[in-house]
Image (cartoon, rainbow, N blue to C red; front, side, top):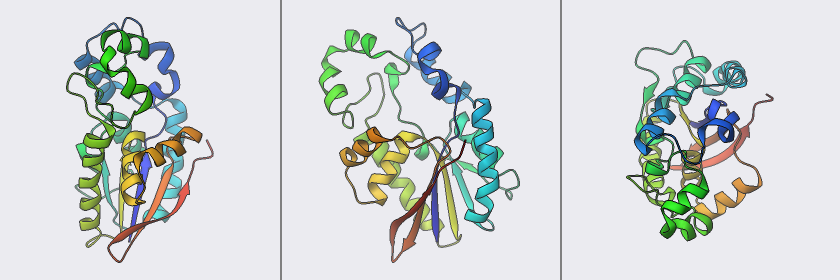
Length: 224
């Protein structure tokens, strides 16, 4: 029984974040920035090719009738739609458990603007990023995202009583939290690995459910 954790294909934010999304001063409010991130940011041409590559490799990895979940963000939804265009009724299902970390009022703020407006957050943001809580209704990686990841891991384990494969189209931060849980590691350990090499867009993490526990069995990365 298999769980595949898939980072969404390359988005326009991934490709051009420092030339358009992050400005100082930021030209829009925190809620507007988060809405842009969630509902507007789509895939680049390279991202479409990555999603088409997923369409080539996932049928063999996922087998028949997988249970498929996406975050509620457009870039994850679009990746799944291109990668698995012929799913049965009711799939994929969207769940906020797989959403990107919510950065609240800090969404699309440059670090300089963030530090100028919220100087009390500087130390945690620089030195303890996993416990840093975004201002204005945001969440930390160590609490909000990790708690959501734990709920999804439990959901996936329950779903694997009915399906042989569960797929999760998600984001880098949620994948970090899932890795920490499924691989029995700490967030600082996973983040240290991410600093050496971030999980690529459209990469697939493979986990097998064995005796009630998930075991990492491999990674498939796109050639694009």
